[in-house]
Image (cartoon, rainbow over all chains, first blue to last red; front, side, top):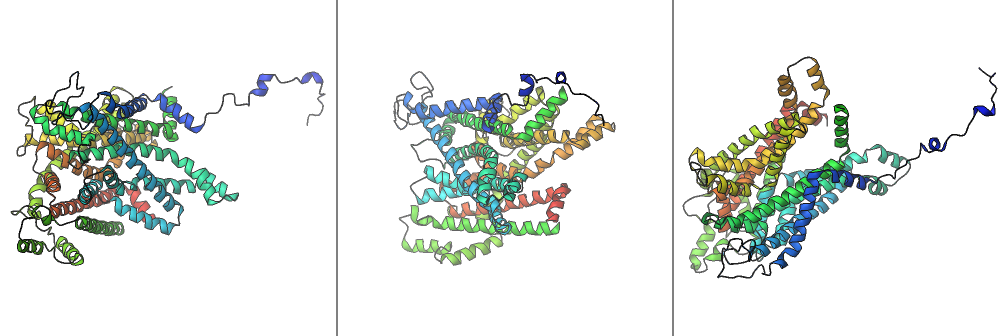
Length: 324
Length: 310
């Protein structure tokens, strides 16, 4: 023990202000979603997709009003006119303006895709959430049912249902298409949500909450739901192109919306009919639009996944560190 | 292991039964019957005979049991619109065509998809990576019918020896199988790239490198072999997608396959044919899924262990 040091006042001095502030967090902390958005903004491909989507959405809303022709207006004197100053996208076999029809078709394709994805999302979250929170016995029964539904080939069911419903009613309506697509389409979402819930239920922070007496509902609301939101959002974004694709395929097989209402799939189907006589533009435009829609949703979904997944982020940082 | 296979087989049978039942209910819930719809002028006696011929005069429960029994024997009944062929004969005529087209597309996807993904991963963030990612983004975004029509317009119309449509020789299969293969190819490339990146970062790769094994051996024996597992796991879905894609592709290229029969049966509202083809496809698909899953557990011992550990 060294007790022989004499402490004098000179030995002590006030710490300078900077030193005292060094423990403070200087910049405002970034909220989770702001952080995700910041990372998403750096992803050029995803931003391209987002911008394209915004443009297409706006065009699908106002595009039908621009050319001055109604989508059902026939002009038999001007059939199969190639794109020109008067008809920007040309006209079809019945002399209808394809500009108006294309954007209306885009609107229907978007609505069908988004609605179908949202319904899948709703059912999937509910079903998966209940299965994840329920007792293992109930969970295993629910998942067996989902498994059987999932192994029924999706497209066969969609085709079959649209045939039957369109026979029963007055043709294929938007409602029928969406119903046919969602009747088995919700299973992947349910699987995802269940997996997430099961994983998060066992996480340390849920356990910590439980140990200090939090109720099941509170844990669900405060810990599980916010943390599953990311993967669910990614899945939602990636379900939309699948729905748009299914709708387009159905339209192409002749099971699309009832004429004169267009969707991108039925427009492409009409275009295929006149392709042998050299009118390629009629299939080109809807085909390109479907591809742009699918591209945009796909890259946006991928970008969101990269922005949300901390594991991937870590991997990238490790790479950066290695390359230094 | 055998317990797992038996469990899966039981699930497959349940699924099939569900599909058959749903198809049956759906097809019989359509208002009116197939003969009353269009042939309003046929005499009452003929109409009754027609109903009798297809067993439509019996109560639903009896029809259902008969249908189940027939399918169990592999008999899909008679087409309601074609007088010359039964559903079985149509399947026998159309399926080999669709199957060979699908197999060819699957082969193209399996050869080029993983290779593209592996190259992308090995040259991460370099030129080959960008090229293969562009190809796979296009492949994922462009539906097969768009791909098909574009191939017709820009390849078949320009190159003489490639036909626009039809079936028979090898050159007929070229464009349709490419159009069909693009989407699975792109999916496999993306999957392979991410799984390859994950594997490359593993310790056993470092160990292999440090032992002085040649670079090609590290890539082929250690990286690719482990990275290819996820590809095997999506094969079932891929086959299912190829099948749906073939409906559309066969329509565009005028190929007389099962997909073509299916689309025409939809147009004709030929219920027995729709039902027959749906159930047939379901059987094929479920068997494929079963086969792929079992093969996957054989290839990857880790899955087998967790299954048995339960």
